[in-house]
Length: 149
Image (cartoon, rainbow, N blue to C red):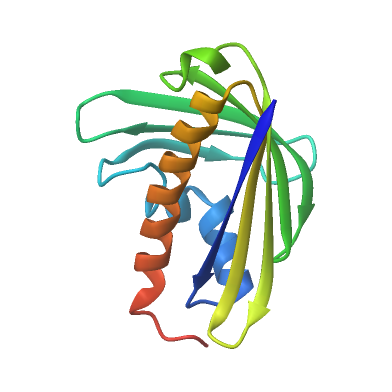
């Protein structure tokens, strides 16, 4: 098994970033690796609660993931299981991986560290890294013109 870790600096308070990670409206602003739309976002943000997100990429393919919230610390930490229900990497079909997101207050807003662990292959890790990088870059851009309060 393998994992990846990405770090981004976001011009928004941790509480605002946390909302972008956990609310359907927030997720709709950044989820997915390219400019394609989020088609569905459902969240029940509590330990044992579930999420489901479906998005369409610019090439027309649709992908859907689901998982369970394993740890929820408001504005600080989010841990969840991750499973593709459609699309995604073939190596991960039917398998569950783990996502950990830590938010830390910094001078410009928030430093976000995302770790996606328990991926099956190097190819899957590379694909997920590219996908998360695109999505997190959209998240950074979303807040780049916002004023930090």
